[in-house]
Length: 79
Picture (cartoon, one colour):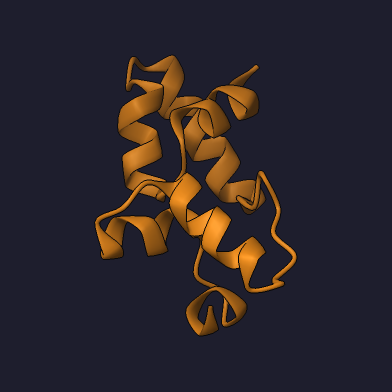
């Protein structure tokens, strides 16, 4: 919980802990921490890079791995 409150994303915590992001989300909720379903925020530079790489053929799954988010988060950004 401390790492989340200090700025780590749910996905980063899940990856580090070796569990699914939904498990982390449930643990945070049980502890009374207000969580966002979509806690990824990108800078304008990151968004431009993501959109360019996706247009160049890098998959949403690969971009998700690079940025520590779900591929669906990437897909929402490139639409």
